Length: 580
Ligand code: ATP
Ligand code: MG
Ligand code: MG
Image 1 (cartoon, rainbow, N blue to C red):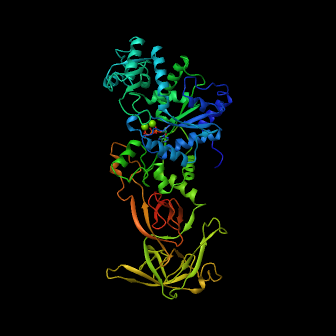
Image 2: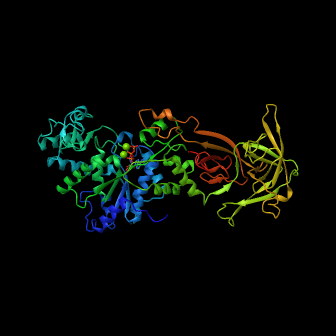
Image 3: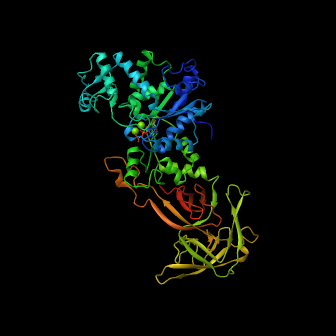
């Protein structure tokens, strides 16, 4: 990886470090969980970031941008990035997602262990602390229990131009709120009966400061805390506290949280004032999220694709999830390269899908083994080549290393070639096989096409040609005959049969979820085509193996379905950009 390119976040970090902002900091005050104090132990002067997914789905390519950013900054500044599960919505969260997220962050090449300590946390680790902090806020008059219904709260919040209206419960005595909060926690009320709200300013021009809800009642079983709690903290309340408890220095999030920043700061400043947290407090910084064309990344929509059966699962190779991209043949290096090329800024922009594909080609080209595959096969008979004879041919495993390892395969009388490499009536500028034309069979001989054989339906079943014996590649006479076309082939008797899945974009429109239209209307009905193909002999289709199939693109043996006996291979990306 090359030297990091500067960006506004690096400038902020440089300035914070120069100012010695983290020099003498104390770690989160007691009573923070023991893990947190341990996490805080190594070098306090360093920066600390976090990647905070909600375990309610699989990670997608947008998350990769945040992962590369947060873990990348921590790496470059010798700090640490925490993995934190923001599990404050029990209904949608599951262990399955926790495991999948851990798997994918590791796969991308990032790690959250330092000095033998795992810096992996859960918002639910802090439920007890959060609750204690909430009581402190209530006692200080910074929060109150509101008995308005959710609808009334919404209705009295005001608008961008109209201030909100104070709740009739806003000025109730702190002791009354405290007793009700305890009753809420103890399960004495049904869902939605009341809520704990911050007391800030119902007339604030920033609607997020109009007494936002801190706790709501939810009688739901949590994937980690079970039925211990029936009140759950709102994300906007839990998040700043989690950051502070973990000693996060730079809390980096996407732009839509910009309006939440005043609340983030308000919470931390009040808790510091009440002696619950120590300076320096974390600061929130926003960057533009990734919008990739031909893709949806909203988790709600990804869930819909999976649960309504539009795709085969979260790791369907057409999905923009990291699990899907991995199965499709994307490498961690390609995704990191893509994120590096994106950079970070505060300006929203759409990124063309071709940029992601280019990163995969650039990552694989120098390293991918080459092989030949024939996807839409027709027989080519070399009529003047002896039967049962094998002429050994060879080719570099990777042309970037011409003196490196080679692969070898036999030339025989019966070959498979692509159906499209023969035309009875060639169009202009067609240089491949047609009656009378000379072409090179790559790594083999120059042949002259002599015609074809058709079946009763008029389909071409065999192409015929004669070889020129002196022209075998790598021999002195190889270049004695000049030809304009080159065709790939495999020996029919030696080729390995394989199922090849040719994936295309999942949506037919660049912005499937813009406007009011249902994004499902833009699903591409032809996003997967399956063909039976012939592969170069010796191709070992271990699950996860990748190749460049010459002239065709980059391919991967499917992680789930491929076996050495019955290869199932996915096309990851074509050789050239076909999106324009
Ligand atoms: P959704 O709204 O689809 O549920 P989310 O942003 O709520 O997605 P989280 O699991 O909460 O999903 O996201 C974890 C982190 O990943 C957040 O910090 C978020 O900012 C970041 N993230 C999510 N989507 C993108 C994106 N498209 N580009 C950059 N960062 C993203
Ligand atoms: Mg979220
Ligand atoms: Mg969300």
